[in-house]
Amino acid sequence: MLFAQLTDLHIPTETKESLDYPNGVRLRQAVSFLNRIPTRPQFALITGDIADSTGTMEEYERAKRILDELQIPYFIMPGNHDNRTNLRAVFSGHAYLGTQPLIDYKIENPAMDIFALDTLIDGQHAGALRPETLTWLEEQLRLSGSKPVLIATHHPPFLSGIEAMDEFRCLEGVDRLAELFARHPNILGVICGHVHRNVHGMWQNRPAHIGGSIAPAVELRMLPKQPIGIWPEPPSINLISHKPDRGLVFHNVPYVAAARLWEGYIKPEHQH
Image (cartoon, rainbow, N blue to C red; front, side, top):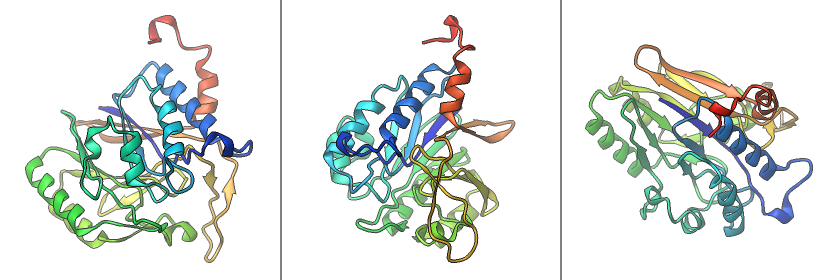
């Protein structure tokens, strides 16, 4: 199983696209890269913050135009910059978004299922796992039996070491999620967004991964009381693979540089 994680797109309207932070251009480059690589992922999962401001219809319409150029299926999750109502309205063809107040769903795959959990608190930067989300997850885990599963959230339930971002992590429901991890050894790990950096660690003795972002990176400031800073790193996507004999493997790909390297490598038989 191989899939792509894209996170923190922060797509503005075209009139608000900045020359310093051209997030729409960055996303289009990511889509182009995914459409061209020889080892194509089965699907893409966007782990939140699709919109740049408060989740306007115009932001989602622009994001959808770009994402629809993907030649693989894609799934979307809300982040703290998103609006569930507008997200559902624009991405109306994505039936998995459902009609419930929260957007929790399962991506089924023969090798491993992914449970996408809604952590959005309207009007706040920090996140929460509500009781209804965790009750739903508990039932889904019961039904999964021993099948490998992966948890996906926008807000990390663990500390990244960047204090200014950790202040706005997932602050509620984390203890109950940890209990589910303890009871279900088939949970292989958790993937997240929100921090705008590629971060790896361990949480509940499982791999914990924060994906690199499409939007500009947050500077690695790990001293106490340092404010959030922006750092001119290249945008990146994340390729995540799973095989029973080796488990999870994470590849962070700074795709703008990579796309240039692929120029002379991709052969006609590899193009789709």
